[in-house]
Image (cartoon, rainbow, N blue to C red; front, top):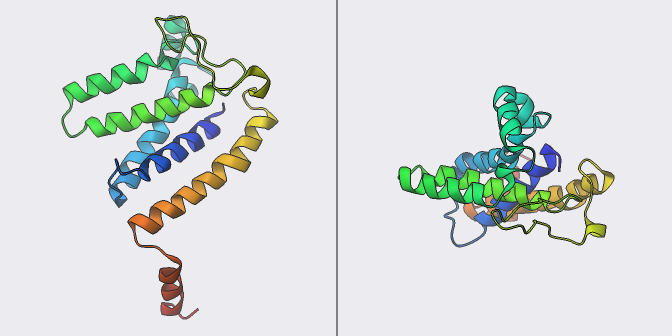
Length: 186
């Protein structure tokens, strides 16, 4: 998937997560955690120098690519799990920032499982690959199918989840909008 699709999928996942009872909805969640989820949703592609994040951090990207290759360790389920465990042990209250990045990395991996190549060694050290759909339903990165997924599914879902999030956590309802418009004379 392209970085735009990965970010959209990460934000959709983060907004969906915000709808669960596990997350206390607050402006802080949206300001602090969604950007970290978005960062995590492109972070696994640090192993590809031509990727969006790889071009931003070329030295690091080339070293990781040389040592691990593309869709290597940063794309294994083990990577975000280890990062979450280490962050949970070493950090106290800040561990939730690491968890947000790890959640974004998992969303990235889910997105890559929709592509034709999937993730060859997702369950490393086991040989099982990570794919979500049969090959005929998967798409190539940057293809029309990915663009349609982004425009027809991810973006509308993101808008709906933003609305649900804001309306529930910040009291924005249709009646509050009409009160606002009346207050400004419209």
